Amino acid sequence: MKAKNLCLCAGLCAASVAVAGGDKPAPQLLGNSINVQPVKIAKARYENGQVVRVGDWMDYGGTTRAATVRVFDCFGDSNSDGFMDDAGGCSLSSSRWWFGTGYCNGFATNDMTLDPNTDLAAGLSRIDLAWYWTCGGFGTEQCVIGVWTQDSSPENGCELDSFDYSGWLLNYGTLSCNPGGYYYSNVDLGTGTWPAPTGGAGSYVIGFLTSSGAALATCAQPMLWGSPNNTGGDPNGPGAQGPAELDDDNPLDGSHTTSECYTLAFGVCPDPLGAMAQFWGETGGDPCAAYDCDNNGVVDTRDFSCFFNLWVPKNIAADCDGNGVVDTRDFTCFLNGWNSCR
Image 1: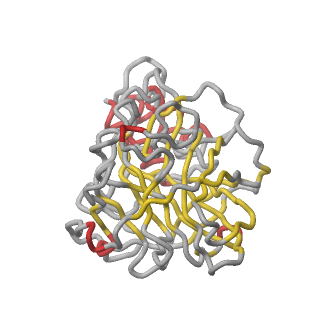
Image 2: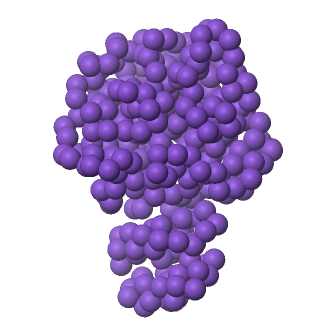
Image 3: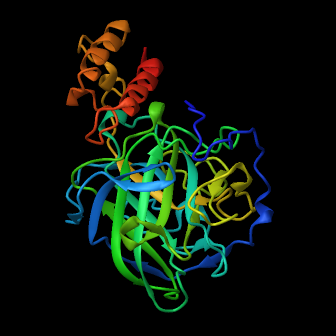
């Protein structure tokens, strides 16, 4: 797994060992699922501790891509219908784990290894996710969820977020607080993607926001499930996930420190748990094709020179991370992919 060893906050890259899952509240089951869909979506970065929108808000048009397949499942959807089922024989149907109404986790980062057949160059075009919206009590609060992919991973010695790529803000409008169940959503971008982590291994970040993405939600948390490699995980599900997770709960401030690295192994089914999400993409194709800049069928030093000659004058063809801007992030993006493919 490629690791960049970049930190969200300076001075927090010291080596750390994930603390025991028992330091969190005991996981509980919740079975009432409530479907919601975003009203608008927008591309955004997370940089210098802030969400920065880099695209206009667009009306959400619903599912438009029928040709995608599941490439990572920490959701429990063995029949690929976008709804929770009794994946892996845990005898829980659509019930999923959480930490109760008294727990808040503004940002969750979960380890992710994509299905080995994933077309990495095509990116990830759909996400299914689930969360509990505690917010301010029993009123309502605007709900915006930010989702980013990255090359760093908490499985790599509690490595902190690198935020390599732009992600997406999903604006759900106003949602009821403590609705008596958990919310879930099936979001197809229609246009645009989440970039796949370099080599297909990294992590994803889910941030719970309000005020159109400008501030943290009062209180929210991801629902929890496990991926196919976990005890009780769906044996037919794609991808894999380890036990380490970064959770923004000590304190709730929109960032992670090494003291917020946890092992979510509780001995329940599935085990370990992780922030509940499922990504869809494409399979087949050559994952290294994106780094064959001169299109000669071989990834070598000539491709690096080819890319460099596009990157220096800021040619849009050098927009490796797909965020519409050619900058140093694209150089790092290409360098990591090129190194893994040559």
